[in-house]
Amino acid sequence: MHDYRACVATFESMLNARLRGDAGQPFVTFYDDDTGERTELSFTSWANWVAKTAGVLTEDLDLVPGDTVGIDLPPHWLGTVFCGAAWLAGVQVLTGAGATARVGTTAGDLVCSLHPFALAFPPGAAPAGGQDFGHLWPNQPDVFLGERPLPGVPVFDGLGIDDLTAVGSSDRVLTEIDPTSHQGVRLLLDLLAGTGSMVLVANAAPGSAEARRTTERVTATR
Image 1: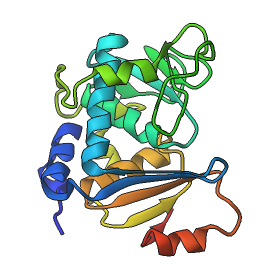
Image 2 (image 1 turned 90 degrees about the vertical axis):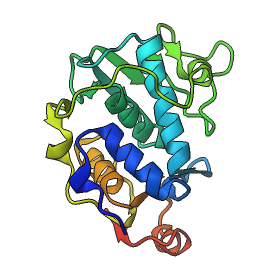
Image 3 (image 1 turned 180 degrees about the vertical axis):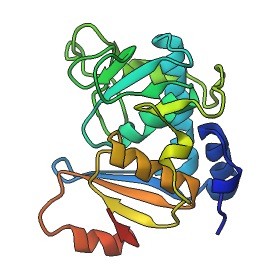
Image 4 (image 1 turned 120 degrees about the horizontal axis):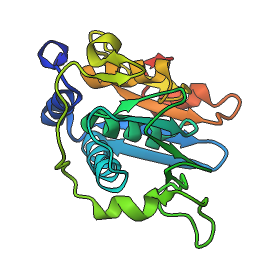
């Protein structure tokens, strides 16, 4: 097991450390028991989504380091991606009012259909006033080419990476916590700083947890 915590100062350095050590391992596995969806992202796939989405934030929303973004999504794998994309681009995630731009499902500067493959809304179904994420991300490269933030900048509600990250976890964690919440961000960064991974469940069916712990080889629950 590697402990990356001591040698990281930015989100990007944490990302690169995991890519060197755990690129093919699952990082985010998402279930929605209402729709039957199961989406699993290896660390490489997750990092590609983060890079593409950082490109959307900077190229299509014109966000720059020091700007802020609000993420109004239900618990979903894309919530983890948007957090990572914001941090890669030096954009702080805000949970309250006053963000430079907002991401949502029904309204926002950027709107997401939450289709299992992050596709665009059907014709005529996208909320008015926002750009459709499903149309934008395919045009972005798998490597983020934008400006990098300096170490120590705030990443979430005024807190920096060091404020939010513990020693790093090696657990495979079963959770229903919204990854864009304060508790969810701490969990995401703690797993990133160690060798851990997340099994995120939305709309969990009653009695499903025990079987899922076995199927997904879960070692901890949050």
